[in-house]
Each structure stands twice: as structure tokens, then as C-alpha cells.
Length: 146
Image 1 (tube, rainbow, N blue to C red):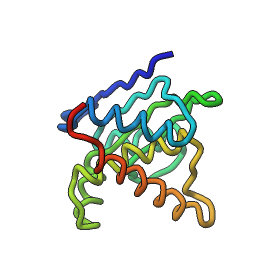
Image 2: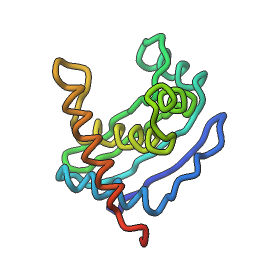
Image 3: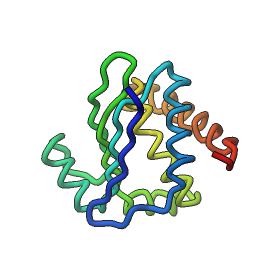
Image 4: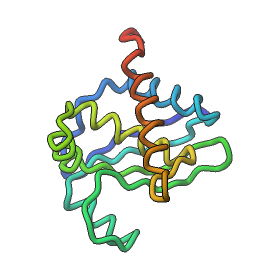
């Protein structure tokens, strides 16, 4: 099965990503976790959409940067990921980082969840951050020529 990555937007414009480079990077990250990308669907949205999804599907009443729905089977990672561009922007400002860097971190965060890395339990957040940083290092060092 060939990797299929879908980029959608709901109530926002699609962010200006280098799609070919981003998709190559995501495949490399998945491979580094001994996984293969099946179908990934990234849905970029606003805060109102993400809180609606959070309330409806997870019974959580708060804003978040990403919600990941995992449909993976064994080594094949697949899922839908809602990303609030509003929250990504406010997080980038709060952390003092570049918007596209924060967006990349959130994009790969969803993939890392699909690869089996969690961030809710004791000590898991630090493990997730280490994997995010390793993935961002891969992106930074990925040749501009795809």
C-alpha cells in the first residue's frame, strides 16, 4: 500500500507548507519508528472547530492544538488529525518560536501518536518531546531538493 497523505482545511486556509518535503519527512519519521504510512488525513481548522471535535468525540471541554484519531494496524500507521491553527499560532507566540516550526512540531506530534508514543502518563511528555525534537532535527537537515 502506497502512502497517502491528505491535506484539508476547515474554516481556515491551508497553511503554506512545502508538501513534498513535509511528506518525505513524515515518511522518514515513520520509518525511523519501524512504521509505514498508510493514509494520513491532516485537517487544519480553527479553535471553534477543534473544541467542537474535542467535545463531541472525547468529551473534553478545552481547546488543544491537535486531536489524533488512530486507525493504525500493526506497522501501518493511518489516522485523522485535526490541527487548530489558532492554537498553533498562540502556542508559537507563547513559546517564542517560529510559527512554521511549531506547526511542524504539531504535525509530527500526531504521527508520533500513531507510531505508539504517548504523552499523558508520568514521564511520557518528556519522551514525546524527545521524539518531536529528533523529528524536527531530521526536517532541518532534510535536503531542500526533493
